[in-house]
Length: 148
Image (cartoon, rainbow, N blue to C red; front, side, top):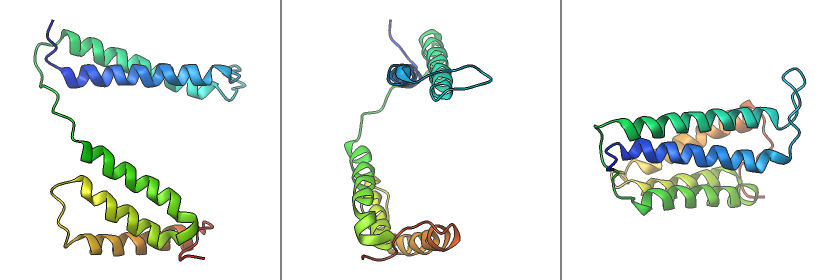
């Protein structure tokens, strides 16, 4: 049988896998009852709901006759955002939010071929000003602004 709604079918399988993995990881947590919830109660509920959604998506995609094929995977879309987030996490404590956020955005923009490099410095400046204002001065998170 040829699946015409491959995107929905694969998404359903991914939801099932994530929900199942969450159940396996959280099996050692105490569930408790609805009135006295333990640490594993809410994650278990979310995992079951995600698995139910995945099952509905997969079955519906299996039965439908119209749909679109899955596009080929572009590695740059996975690589650059992941690299940007890892760099941000590694740099934040030592180099402060200004340099870390600039690196996050400077690397992350390469995920898209449609990025206009002339606009990136303006994006970085605006994001840095916003994040410093909100997180450092507004919420008063203990984040260094510049390197120590």
